[in-house]
Amino acid sequence: MAKIDKAVFDSGPLIHLSQIDALDVLKSVKKIMIPYGVFEEIKLENQNSRLIKKIRIVKLSKNFKDISKIISEKYSLGLGESQVIALAKKENTGIIFTDDLDARTVAKSLGFEVHGTIGLVLRTYREKIVSKNRAISVINDLNEKSTLFLTGELTRYILNEIDKS
Image (tube, rainbow, N blue to C red; front, side, top):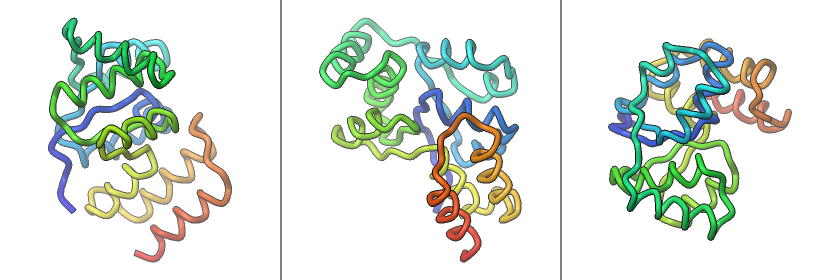
């Protein structure tokens, strides 16, 4: 499993990792892009300048703003989520990171590979970018200290997956 060349991120994974000071998990993606709408969400939610330095903020052209609006209306997605899908289409990247279930469903139906914060942590661990102890710590912190909702069952499953490998 190699590093991801480029991916488009929704605000959730960026905010959740920032809340627990786990930006090192982002190292498995070479080029992180976000639409301006997501940048606005991150700015409101988080003043972490280290996070902002790691990402490329992209303003959508009118054509892709229109695509974003159509996606938003057709699938009842928020501005950030619909802009993420439009940006992934514009940049011709097949990978989107979001923790929003509706956005994940829509993006998958449109042919994108979709992962969330947990998938990113597991990938970074499997690539040996972070140690087993660091991956376990990040999962525990996401569960206990971030705004990401994880069930106890999912947390145990993820920790077991890390422990077995």
